[in-house]
Image (cartoon, rainbow, N blue to C red; front, side, top):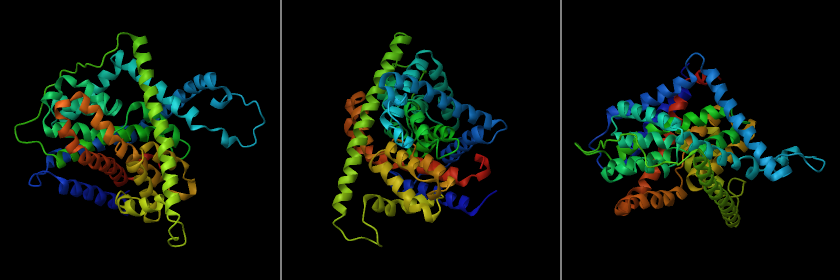
Length: 425
């Protein structure tokens, strides 16, 4: 059933497209066919998982898979860290809620998923999945082979790993294709972090694993569309061919597991350091703001400032105005800090303070790497692969950040525009 809040989300989707058109390097053109194709792909992918008969069984399988990975990881964590990692407690426990430790119960999942992804890549399983998505994007949105492959790779790999997949074709990418690759990398997340996000949200959002998976997949076509609006392709350019071979290779299954684990360790250390530093910086910022008098009876904090700034965008995505300040704050946290911190805070919101609809919309809005810290990662990572175009990358990276951020918001608005009953509520 179509409701007023669905129309609200549709208006928000249109608003996001207008904002990107206003940023365009050529406002005389608008990719109408691509817009129709991208939104069509998003809707089809949502319907495939949530709308088809038997889809609930698929969703339950995904959730069970995430729980299984979590249980398997927990055994390794308990073996290494003992009672601190969830093993038998040597003391009487009076507050079981305090036993949860983010470093031991969530971050180890990234190590396991990273190693598993590398192994599936070596066994060609992940390559074929990426190839299928690459062909889908190539046929429905008119992307060149190399761009389609990079977009598909971004769904499961990271924003730096995916350019490696098409490294042989990087020198042939046009300015528009290069920008597209950057935007999609910022609009999606790596497979190694999807399970961690689902684990964080599973206690507060039904079918969290399915929502996180779909969020990363359908934000890819949204990123393609917004990238093409901001930096349109010039007539007759683009379309570099890709034969689906890759420079990303492993010598053996053991080599894949070991290198995947080391890559995951790098991600874990990076996330841990960022969480420590940025949480501390927010605390410092709130301490500095405490010198100002209370506003409307409450202390002035970074959370409240971000909430006010992004509340209109949250409302445009379909969030009820009573929850827009809290949702706007989460958008600000995602942009200025990281999506990991935003997901942690979303999962910590008590059930009575946020509706299930808002939680679902925010899950899609937060599921992307578009944050200020990723700007440096993008410049350094892609710049190493394309040193001769480093200045061009630097010149486009901030626009790519805005487009990548808005791509996840566009995805959230599209989900908000669809009937509630589709998602089993």
